[in-house]
Structure formats: C-alpha cells, structure tokens
Length: 315
Image: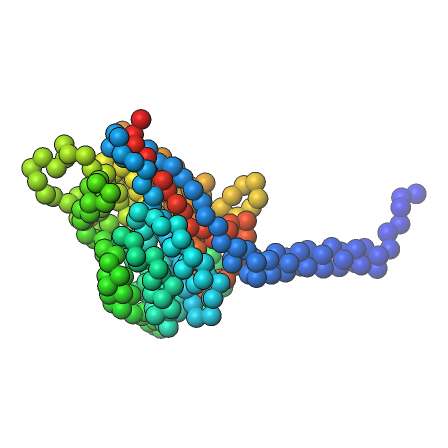
C-alpha cells in the first residue's frame, strides 16, 4: 500500500515553507533598506590614456547621489571624500531625490568643490521621483509618468548655479578644454539621454595644431545608452564616464544585475569596460551610483559606490 498523507500535515508543511520564504524576503528587504544602501564603498580603477611621460592623474567619479533630507550618513561620507584630494571630480547626474535637497547637496559637496570639476544632469536633477511600485524597477527602464499629473520640478537652476559658483564646469550639451596638471583635457558632455535630451557639441576647437598637441578626450553623460557610447567612441573619446544604472541596484550573487535601466547589457551595468564600435574602442566607466530613488530605497548585492580612476601614461 502507498504511504498515506495527512492533508492537514501537508497544509502545515506548505504553510511553513511559505512563511519561511516570506521571512527570507522580508529579511532581504530589511537588509537592503537598512544596511546595504548606506554601506558606501570606493571602487578603484586604472586607465592608461595619458600622453607618454605624464604623471598619474586621479579622477573622482560621482553619480546618482539621489540625496533626500535626513540622509546624514550619505552627506557625511560625501564630505569625507575630499580627503582623497582628487585632481578632478566628475559628477554624472541624478544628484537629487527631493525638492528640498539642493542646499543639503551643495553643503555635502562643498569640500569637493575645492578641486576642479565638471558635471552633467540626470532626470532626477530636473524632476523629483513620484511614488510607484518599487518592484517596477525590475521590469525595465524607468519612464516619466504620462498621466495628467505633472512631474514635480526640481530647482535645477539653483543646483547648477551652486556647482558653477564652486568652480565646476557645466557640460550640458557643451564642450570645453581645461588644462590640468600640465595636460589639456578636452571634455564633451550631453544632457540626459534617458530623457532624449542629448545634443552633441563635438570636441572643443582651439589652435590649428590642437589635435597633434598632447591632450586627453573625456566624454561625460548620465545614462549610458548604446547610441551615446557609439557616438563618443566613433568620435575618438579616450574615456567615457556615465552612471544611471545604479549597478542594477538589486543583483543576484554570482550572477549580477537583473536590469540596467537602459539598453546597456546587464553585465555592463557597473564597472570599467571597453566599448567597441565601427572599429574604435573606448574604455567606459559606469558608476554603480551612491544612492537610490527615495521611492525604492534598497540595494542588494550592489553596494553604493564612488569611483577613483587613476589615469596613467599610455604604454
């Protein structure tokens, strides 16, 4: 005779398994919300793109700060980054997550404004996030709402004015040359591609022999859509810096990001990778970001980061 199963016992087993699964899920969310999203780290990379004989040059890459009132740990960590004494700070946008954040952000970044810097905006420098299902982040790229309720505007003008007063250069659809440590850096930046606002300004034009003189070309964008990477790589950028992806924000250990929030392959959602197109190759650093939307305040297996890139001479 076959083994007889007690229906009540089976139901109890299923209930126990469901309870265990729920408890594990709640634990993961609690960990991601209370611990990992405030477990800031520095990622360090080396990129050999400087003219021969150049001394190392350090770039601090910040992205996706998403500051909200009350985020004291994040603000303190940002202030402490000034101890790194970078040669250049590059901010690739999405600094805000609340209409009251601008003065708080400028205060947190004030020590870093003692160093040269450049910046471009992201969508959350224009509009505050609105409530949505947090799990929607895992279903595909985020979009501005299309309903009758208008997005909440942020004080982008005050943000950019504060950066400018601190000496940082606005690269929103602009190009500019900046001499730093005896090297001419040519920058080309775009407005947020996630909002389809990018307009390419080319590279700065100066003297007739500028292309033969030692220089470094750095492209800056918020969202690393493939069309943007293709453009800057074809235009012979030496380095592209971007953010937006949050490194996936929720990752599976041993697998990585589930989404990139754009058309970038998920395995490129964070880190330094080479981008190839039309016979050209350019290193791209995608920051995993420092914050999260305040509507989805958790990270899992994807610590918030700033990135220190040490630029070295070409071999």
